[in-house]
Image (cartoon, rainbow, N blue to C red; front, side):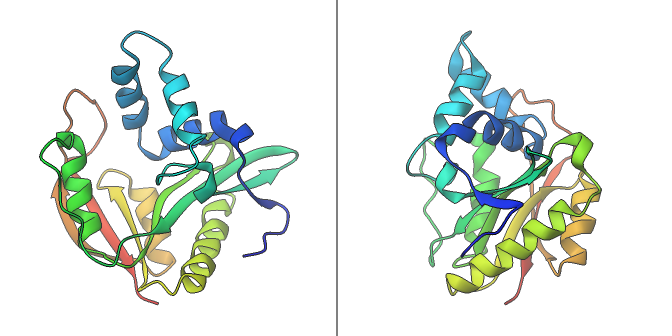
Amino acid sequence: MHLKPPLRPATPADAQTLAELVNFASEGMALHLWSTAAAGGDAWEIGRQRASRETGGFSYHNAVLLEQEDRIAAGLIGYLLPSRPQPIPPDMAAMFVPLQELENLAPGTWYVNVLAAYPEQRGKGHGTRLLAVADSLAAEANAAGLSIIVSDANTGARQLYERCGYRETARRRKIKDGWAGPGKEWVLLVKQP
């Protein structure tokens, strides 16, 4: 997909911004996990390292950024899910099991892993614009639709997704494991092609 300003692909230099957007989208769960992994060190450095990776879902390769007035306002991270459900390894962190279970219910879809805007940039249509980019990327990938997982407490985001054609298909109870994030369930929303 050819992106035109104010949209652009992310680069490794955007690692801090991507880490911040992931933390916004996860309602603090990302920073909680990075803090645990950092063991008293710089939790944000863990996030930056993950954003700078060449592979994996949370990689700058899978990110599109939207700029406003020479600053990044919002971003999208997404990719095609495998066409078959993935086995859940016995050593997967308990917090991720319900999320993987939901992803497994949407095989072959283009997964909107992160859609986030800086707080002062919310309500300006950036999410709708980035979801249109996701639609285009899904079409290019011949995806079986699109999917996204959202917290049951994030009603504003859910309203946006529903306005853009996503519908609830399943829920799983959150396993918080020390994270104080809001809500009780993760909700899988799917958009048919």
